[in-house]
Length: 430
Ligand SMILES: [Zn+2]
Image (cartoon, rainbow, N blue to C red):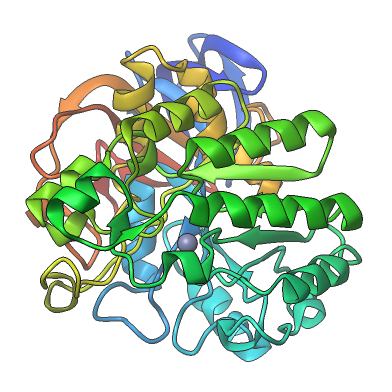
C-alpha cells in the first residue's frame, strides 16, 4: 500500500488542537510533525482544514439483508466515507433481523469489503418482538457489544430488566434503547403539540420518550449495566440523562443532527422526508439537545441514517415510513447548527462524532489520538466550505434527505480508512 501525507492541516483530537502533517504508511500513522518531507507518498492537501480521527456512527440502517433496493452495505459505506466516517454500527432491524449468529456473521463478512469499518448491533430480543431475549452471549462472542431492538422500543419493563441483568455479565456490553413508549406513541406520525393540532396529524407525545428513559434509569440503578439512549429528542429526557450522569450511573446518550436542527414546524410541508421516529420536536427541545451536546450530557452525534426507496417513502405523510438519510450530511449539519452558531466548539463536535462514540462501541482502532503507531483512520474537514446537497450525487441508494435546498457549512474533503484514501477532494475513490 502506498503511503499518504496529509499536509498543512490543524489536527484536532482528544488531546487538543495543533498544526501538523500526518504521514500514513501501511495502514498506520507513521509520523506526525510540522513540514514533513514527502517520501514517495500521495500528498493530500489539508490547508485551511481540520484533521480529525475518523468519525464513528453509532446508528446506521444499512438495509442489507432484506431491503437492498433502499441501500446496501457497500452503498451505505460509501455514503459514510463521504461523510467522514471510518466506522459505523449497523442497526439490527434488517430482514432477517440480526438476532442470529449466521446473519451477523454474513453482515460482518460483507462489511469487510466496505469503504468503512462495519460493526453490528445485535437484537436485544428475538425478532425484535420485545418478549424473549435474543442470544446475547453468542452474539457477544462474535464481537457484538451493542444490543438493541432499535426501531422498536422494549416497552415491557420485565423484559428490559432481564436484558440489563443478562448484559451486565458480558464485558463491554451496552444495552441501547429506542425510547418511545409503544402505547403512548401508537398511531402518531409527528410530535404531539401545536403543529400536530394545526395540521390534524395524530401526534407522538414527548412523554413517550421520557417515561421510558426514567423507567430504564431506575432499572440501571439496580443492575449497574451500561445503558445507552438512542436518538434523544426531548428536553425532559436530556434532563433525566444529565441527572443520572451526575449520580454516577453508567449511562450514555446520542442525538441526531435533525433533532438539534429541525423542528416539528417542518411537517407543515407534508413532505414525508421530515417524518422520523422519534419525531422532530419543538424549538425548546431542539435547544436542549444542542445544550446537551455542548455540556457533554449527550455523548455522541449519531446519524440514524434510514434510507427508504422512493416508491416506499414518497407517500402521503401518514402512510410514509419514518426515517431520513444522514451519513453524507451529519458533519456539515453539526458544524452549521452547532459550531457556526457558537453553541459548541469544533472540538466538542468532533468528540461527539468521533472519539466518544468510538469509546461507547469499544472500537479502539477509531477515535484515539492522532499519533505514530495508531491505526490511520482520519478525516479532513474544510470547516469554511459552503455547499448544498446535490440529490443526483448522493452515494446512498435512496433520496430521502431532509437537507435539500439548505446551505451547509463544513465539507468532508478527505477520508482515510486504515491507511487507504477512500475519499479524496470529496470524491469516493471506489
Ligand atoms: Zn430508533
